[in-house]
Length: 270
Image (cartoon, rainbow, N blue to C red; front, side, top):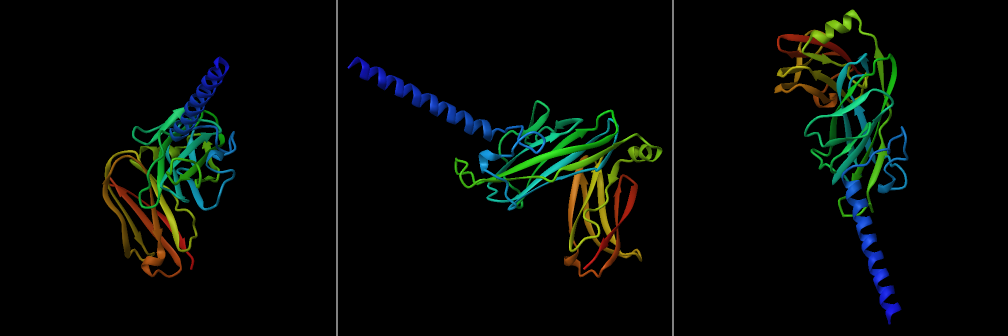
């Protein structure tokens, strides 16, 4: 009888340990995990054994930084179940940092979600900052994203890696010093040429009224993409040329903020 009671006690304790350990895994993963990017891990294999192309994960932001320069970047997750989504972000060099309220936390040298984030318009995004190191060369930003169904288990969840994002770190030139004096930086659209959609991104270094317009080469306005007061930070606009019945050719996009403007060209090929 005594031996039977001892066995029951052992089995009960083992069950409690299993429940506690399972809860730790569930809540630990739901509150973020690191070492899961191409840099030093095997991806979000807790959400599936291998990546899937039905989940699209991208990194966007400036491709070139000066030594020690800080800029804002964004990880975007679409596709899959997408009831909620999380991420892990790493860099080959330099320093990653977070915004308050971004839904990210820093663990060691990497970033991960504080809890899985709900989508807005079919997209989950996480903004973060990256500071270039004090040496020139190519830096790689890594990320993955998990798209989960929120059923309380990992069954049916999916994930994928983001394409590695290369940042060229250069010495500060006279031209870059001029750019740094502006209240914003307008980036080249990507892809370019494009058909039918492309992304136009810019970074505001100061709050202000922002207007982003598209023109043809004769200076005729086609549409206004942005006309709003915006806080400092990184912004990305999706432009779909098929909505405006445009013909193939070169067009201009112009960003204005705080009395300063900049124009870049984009090429549409049907």
